[in-house]
Length: 321
Image (cartoon, rainbow, N blue to C red):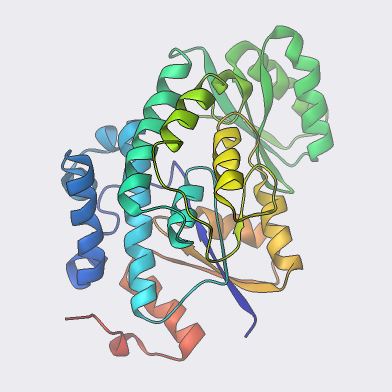
């Protein structure tokens, strides 16, 4: 077997009940949710397990909820003896990746992402900005569409997800014009997304100093395993580089395709999506169909991964009781 990379999902992966099965069966996972409850004093596990989808969709709740669930899945994987040789996370998921790499204490990261969510939500008034997925158009043409539409306002590439999917963000009038131009240039589809803010574009630049001030209040340690940063698609390890990458990530493009291609080039051939949903698993299959990729979010998916990596059958999983 080659090298294993853990990849962590970002905002949009959340759903009511995520992580509950693992929390019920594995004390290590349950302890993560209890620690989240203690850190934030907002009954986060109750919201995640039994709340409403509308409540969970609030950005300052969504972000710590996804991180907590991802870390619960991480701890169960570690209990089973599965460790990463490198980590990466899409947008918010980069915080989960940095927890896995030992750069952040869990409680510190939770408080950071809660504030990050609030800052991002407040940066752009409702109805001003949005995001759209451009399907089936080369990145050079998507960038050209954004440049042409920029005379109407801010619109920029936000997420380079796969060769066939790039998300753009910006002011609504400019965004919609960029979508029209993209169709003229040959895009198969343009899908406006139901998001609360135009993430990863310059409209959120005002968040950077606020996030920098919060990052300066917490201890950031040298990464124990390689971490691929969204903004550079390259490794970061020092506290200074980690902080800089997180600050710039808010208003710069997420280079996800490039990040995954970097890992594949460096010999990673097993990718485990750690946390709710399987969005990154789907993206990876479109980036490189030759690597093995699977998600871990419940007992069934955990058993499938362990059987592949260790030859374990589901009934041999150590529940830690």
